[in-house]
Image (tube, rainbow, N blue to C red):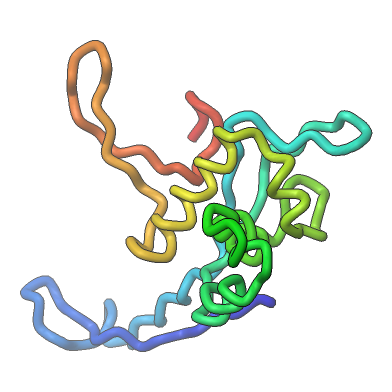
Length: 153
């Protein structure tokens, strides 16, 4: 399920007042981003031993958060809620597109924790950035959790 929604934000000039885009042209609306790429810290290992690290998570809907509450596995063990919820919103891990709770159960704990945090960031905060401190100099800076490997831009 892919959705792209366009919205018209009010135009602002350099003084913060409404207007048009540059040269009298109306500004094109920004699309609402509904899918976010990610890279798992360790990766999902499939039955043939292939490691899958890159994936896509979509924004959650109200249904995504409600349906797992009716799942018997969640009723028996509330900790299973995150497994079912994550399996509903992750659309791809590597070449695997049939993401179900069994796939999420096989993730390393660090990868599940990463996806839980990623879910919270894109659904509650609307972005994938995180504030961090350098362990050496204590300087604060921002990293994009959806970005590539260290050192890549």
